[in-house]
Amino acid sequence: MSYDPSALALVPFVSVENMMRLVHSVGVERFITDLAATIEEDFRRWPLFDKTPRVASHSSEGVIELMPTSDGQAYGFKYVNGHPKNAKEGRQTVTAFGVMAEVDTGYPVLISEMTILTALRTAAMSALAAKHLGPANPRTMAIIGNGAQSEFQALGFKALCGITHLRLYDIDPSASARCARNLAQSGLSITLCNSAQDAVEGADILTTVTADKQNATILSDNMVGSGQHINAVGGDCPGKTELHSDILHRAEIFVEYTPQTRIEGEIQQLDPEHPVTELWQVIAGERAGRNSDRQVTLFDSVGFAVEDFSALRFVRSILPETGFYENLDLLADPDDPRDLFGMLTRAKTRAPEVLAAQ
Image (cartoon, rainbow, N blue to C red; front, side, top):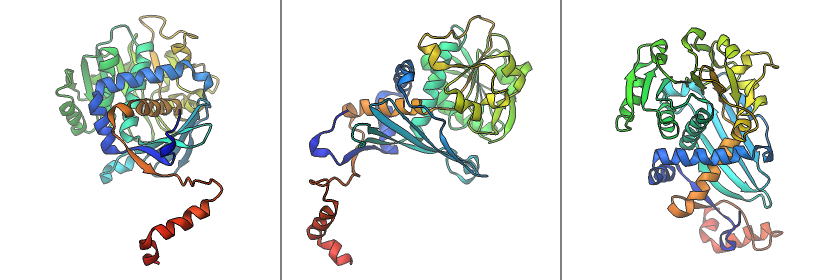
């Protein structure tokens, strides 16, 4: 990474509006596909990254988290919240923004909204995992929980895995109806289902992505057939799970970063010594993924900082060709780095309106 010396103190900022322009300029499915490729690149060099479970501040209403990592050249972090009650108040359950910086200077090189970007990143990660772990040539996916993530998940699996049929279920039928409307022009064949049991019938991939912060049984063991791949997205904090523990005992389990998933994922229900495989090992060719047509595979996804790093890296890489950003005057950067006070003093003489305001 390098800076234009004439713009040292200016930091590219991607607003919500510009993120939407950026995504549409590329196309949603192409954006997810290219983002997945960037994640895959970074997972192949997984040992280079600093890794730590996210720093979480929990309350009775939800959680606020910071997700940092670095590959030694760039540093990135995401601020993200999870507040299920927000939906009842007309607010987003999850919001986020992210920062990427140069390691050798500490200067930020990108600030971006990450509410939309996280949904795209999560879809890219889910579909990438299924590409490595799922059954051959999957065509039907069930999505249980049809909130803000569902359309992104559907398009990600269509683009990366070839899904053509979608089976939707939510305890709120209007959520499924909204998802179906939004995907009406996607080319997917969509079935609205009356129960989770109905939704999983005939599905190759089962995606659970519910919002309530509680231990729940979205899938019971009898609902999961041989050869299916489970994409468990909703479990993302202590005390929140979606799968009956019996499923975990017969599935081959894959995770992002084991120490974090032990705290937040489905495997918080298991003994800490229960074996799991980190997905990067499969992507890098160090461990096997699916080993038979009848095996049940589970991607216990909680989201990890490396994926957000990849998302920021990908966005930054396509900004020059699109121009969908604005420069923020964010950093105080005087001509003489030792004279910050002088910079402040000179600004007063250049700005009469400052004097008038005193």
